[in-house]
Length: 311
Image (cartoon, rainbow, N blue to C red):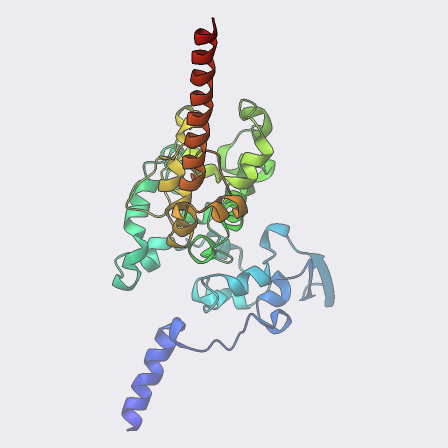
């Protein structure tokens, strides 16, 4: 009996996702990492000066603990991914050079994650302009933070929430001069200027994801990861503002949104906050508009006939 208990204990320790984490993210101030990395400043004992010191934390190393608790990796502890040597401070400088895992290192070839199609996503990503220009230096983490990533697109029924979450990923780099230059090595172009051809910019930016116009849609994936160059961006209004809209194959692909997209009752059209002209068509309104058109046409013809007969 003791033998089997020992084996079970080893198994639990070997698989961090099976154990209850003693270092809970719910209490950042008592977490061995977050007691520093969740604050603007941190304190430590300086052995050379033999005194306590307080310094400002690098803002890029401050973790949003609320987003962390709601992220998909909230069951893991920091040292499940980072070296256990980080538990001591000052950190060894060489630790910053440790290679970080990408999505496929954990999720690739695993049947339990087959529905997410990580291999297909990676295949499409390698066709993208990001990978072609920057190669392996452009990793999943450049857009999807392992600390805070959540499956908002799969779980939310609010189109605007999905749009906001997705666009913040793009804007975290494309609207941040420092991060953009870190990756690209050049100045960040002004998005408003680049999109000066687009009517109602603010409305488009808040109601449509960047990827609707900047990716090649793949039917087998929920979200396309093949980011196209700016020369291939969608610029024809009719590609979205029509009943056969590209949005049906991208933004409205999700099952929870498809009902809103295809439920074409008058109430849906009038109450839908993400209503797009030409995309959400109501059979009732369409029939009514045809009847009005035919009535007007009949009136014109009748009026013309009477004018002719009177002459």
